[in-house]
Length: 298
Ligand SMILES: NC(=O)c1ccc[n+]([C@@H]2O[C@H](COP(=O)([O-])OP(=O)(O)OC[C@H]3O[C@@H](n4cnc5c(N)ncnc54)[C@H](O)[C@@H]3O)[C@@H](O)[C@H]2O)c1
Image 1 (tube, helix red, strand yellow):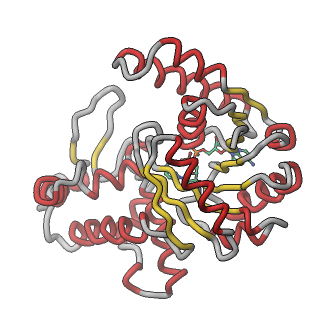
Image 2: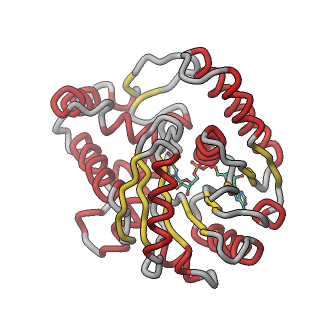
């Protein structure tokens, strides 16, 4: 494993590129949007500055990391020397299938193609390529430079040697890999999303208010943040779409999204990124303020 190509330079793509580059891998960062590539490089530089100021890396390591990064808007150019392609583009099945077809066409024959998808079937994506044995899920967590876990997902056809290579590589990045199989939600979201949905149901049914629900889970279960705050952080639209994948994939009503979640997404209340979800968000403020809508609920 030497040359890494990362497709998609958004929240996850810039973090994945950062971690590979910091561990000595030359990285080609690819996005359809040139401004997005510039923004990603600026974000990586800012995050590296923070690491330097906290003395977790040296100024020289920061410069070495930046010099490992190149950007392009062309998948053909960006993957032509890749040993590993990690796709972290927008979570849409057709879009990812299209990217994988291009990566399959232009990447070297022995390259591994990985996806960072949160919920789309690895088996389905792999079936769109001529190398399904070399397609695998590599699910990093947000923020990538900080979170230790990589959930590695074997598709139906993923070859054991490919899984071994990705496990070894994840360890080289200082991460802890966990290997799981390809069923809806894998492990992380199959367990997390029903918990978030249950928290929203508890609010919807008036069992408790926003602060009480989050405080019980923070102080009672030692979770670093409550499920409603976490849902706001992930994005309520993302939570809804993953619950729908679980509901459709298993055909089990226990995964049906809470009607309150559906309403909030329809109203455009998507959590931190839209300024309001279960809490309201003011730029520059870290104070946790329950949204007006839920202030009177107990
Ligand atoms: N955000 C999270 O917390 C999180 C956590 C784990 C996994 N994921 C998964 O990671 C992936 C990316 O999520 P994100 O939050 O970084 O999204 P994002 O919206 O921040 O970034 C997506 C990027 O993909 C780019 N893109 C779209 N179409 C493209 C194409 N055809 N070719 C190249 N680039 C293209 C967009 O321009 C954008 O920069 C998704 O599959 C998501 O499910 C997200």
